[in-house]
Length: 133
Image (cartoon, rainbow, N blue to C red; front, side):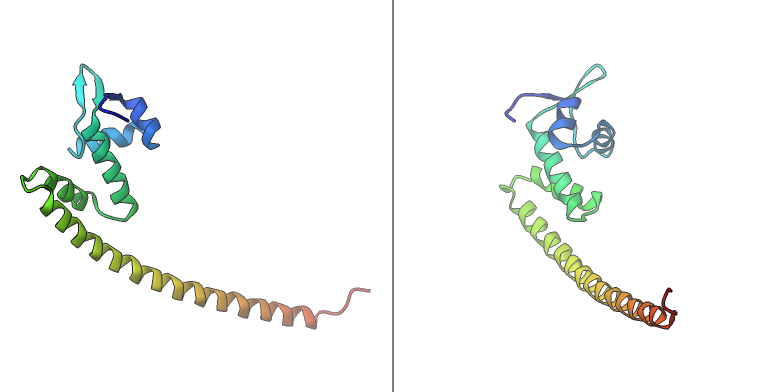
């Protein structure tokens, strides 16, 4: 992808999203394609922003957090503020994800124990049944 403009269909294909998704992000002012009548044309900036939006969503950031990080790009500080804030939010998100993973690991272990207990109970039932003649 170069500096060329892309249509909504090309963006959908390139990023594996729906046109509805792109229009939604546009309505939230996260991306702002050029308009030629009803036609939307996406430039390099929109592609970069969409890539960051999708990555942020994958990591569990809210749209508001993503907006805050994207908006910091336009400050005239060589992106220092953006990088600092993004790292801060990323550390916080990572801590949440790690806590969730521990909780999930505990739940998985407990469920395995319950399955094992249930299988033992079923084996006891099977032992009590008379053998088929």
